[in-house]
Length: 380
Image 1 (spheres, rainbow, N blue to C red):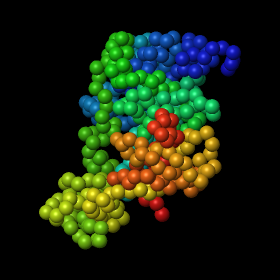
Image 2 (tube, helix red, strand yellow):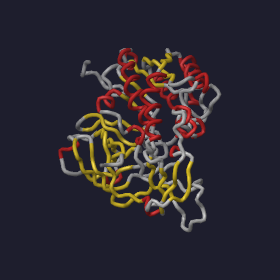
Image 3 (cartoon, one colour):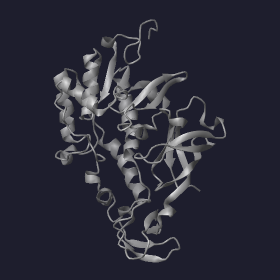
Image 4 (cartoon, rainbow, N blue to C red):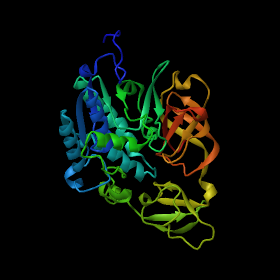
């Protein structure tokens, strides 16, 4: 590519008309606005929507992405703005790379985050490869996160709007992927700006509600999905305290999550009790007082590091980490145990840290840069 041309708005040294952009379109307002915005700026836009599961069964289901209605909405936006749109059948890939692992992780007593695996294994892997096959110069998405150029190349940064920031779900974006991806909405101050742009372009999805649920988990009912995927897996067992004393019976480990207090069926025992551990092998739900939920040392593996120097090039990193998508980053020391494994020590204990969740690394001191992260596990 010639380097003497001025960079366009996507940071590429080509006129927009000669720059092909594949836009990952979920059918929602965010990705639709990205496609319309880039088309309006003169880019050669190609919209691609993934069919991730049987959209016939999901056609009437609201509040989830990639269902049949969403495919239809994405197509309508493409027709309205005048760019080509393709639907790719990724059902098998999605089932193998995301849904099966989700089921196995839940049965093992973990609390998985399938949206991260979907970004990692489907959208930013297979879809990105498809974009390159279409000779696209880059791929754009509607995620609220920022890509900035630093001294060592492309960096991942939190969105300008803290309420919309999706960095927790994108920590596993590899450097090679980040070089190719673009996030045109990350700098916006609020979702209202996105909807204003949708109205400006007359998009048919301008007033469409945001998706809430995991796309294949209607109404957040994880247990029902697991029982369908793994018939007979919800075996009953014992509810025990930290000393092993049996307090009651449960109807399957998959019905419980770390930190849960309500619905245990063991009331009248004095102080409130919380689920502090799930032991899938013995089919036991272990409960204890709230203080038993507190954790300071968190083992993390499968680390994706987005720093400028190798992760294990120093004995420790002083960072801020997030152990839940709904929590703010907290100061911590991250000690590498190898190139992709670490022990994270929180300066202040956190409640409800659960295997299967992500531990995302942020710049210390409240900075916006995201240094990747890894997956929380039980440790040795």
